[in-house]
Length: 143
Image (cartoon, rainbow, N blue to C red; front, side):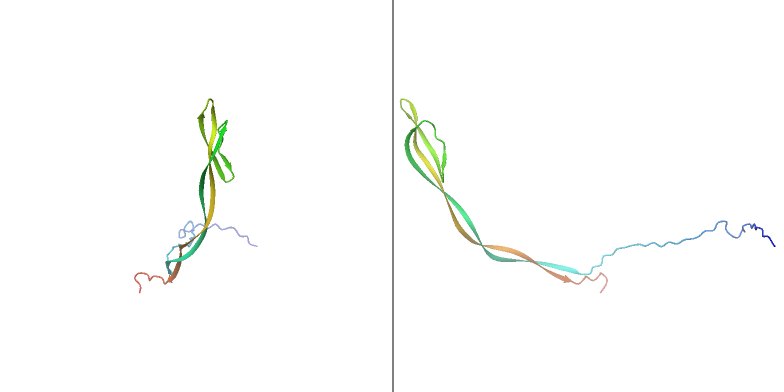
């Protein structure tokens, strides 16, 4: 039986003391480019049409009448609302041996509301867009 002994070899001078392993890596570079694939032309057209509109218009007129009263009173009466009529008292002082108030007249203001149908033709406008697809523009230097 033979026994093996470990061999001790010295590095040779022709091989480098350290071995280098070269690794390669790929990298990606991204660039962008604008490419015209087509063009659009948008034309706008305005059309008009006549339309009849109807609305109720309210009018209010005031009718004023004076009503002679001629009554002696003790205090100044207040303005009062008597249904559709606003009553405004008119007072005068008269000189007697004593001073008294006499209701001389009242002003009656009555509101009269009327409604009438109003018709008028007005012009209305609306717009439409016409879109046309055009071929792309040829790049400069070609064709």
